[in-house]
Length: 244
Ligand SMILES: Cc1cc2nc3c(=O)[nH]c(=O)nc-3n(C[C@H](O)[C@H](O)[C@H](O)COP(=O)(O)O)c2cc1C
Image 1 (cartoon, protein in one colour):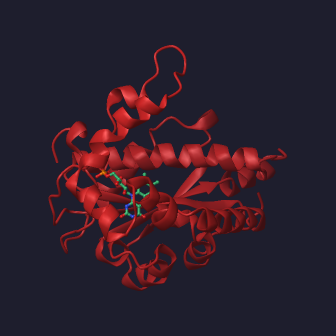
Image 2 (spheres, rainbow, N blue to C red; image 1 turned 180 degrees about the horizontal axis):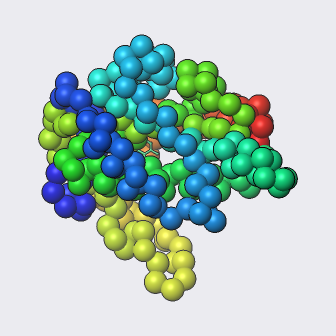
Image 3 (tube, rainbow, N blue to C red; image 1 turned 30 degrees about the horizontal axis):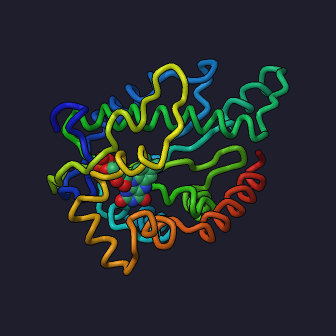
């Protein structure tokens, strides 16, 4: 797929498997990512089975990548394994709390992203699924996750069957702050978002959704406050139910 700077998300895959050896090698590479206290507070569930993908699909609002990709990886926060090891070695673990939920999430996401970079380097295409944290209870059920294990992100992987154009990014100066944070003036915001707002596909997006601005497509259609509040409550409740 070329250099890391040329990368892009791939959502369509060839009907061609990923050899077990290749996948395991990529996972081993992923697990070389930095990890808190060298504890590896994560697990990865590999889904290849069509029936299991079918069970996962509704949790991801039936995004077609789940059933079309040869491999679906669910990256989970895992304080279960480490806590078991502690108890088996006369040590009392204190990892059933929000602090370790966040730490486990950081750990799992570093491993996930390292996997993605390594996979793309081998010519595979990947897509993250943010829907993992929208319906965690359905994923917990489908993958039989025990207490202190929580799905934090999903990556679909396969050989690309599309070659989409790269999508835009904000300019460097929008994201990078020299020495201290420089807050944005209204003029900065106008300038930094001008390119994104000028893109024909984004203009079309505004029209299609009968909105006045691109920002309104985000706030009123794609990521609404109402949905976010409902999902926050669910996420918190399921986190508690999983023992954190
Ligand atoms: C945490 C996270 C969740 C995402 N969730 C989805 C998703 O549910 N469905 C999807 O099609 N793409 C998803 N994506 C991919 C983004 O849409 C994509 O990275 C972004 O549009 C930029 O495109 P690019 O990766 O090709 O540069 C997700 C990406 C991240 C990092």
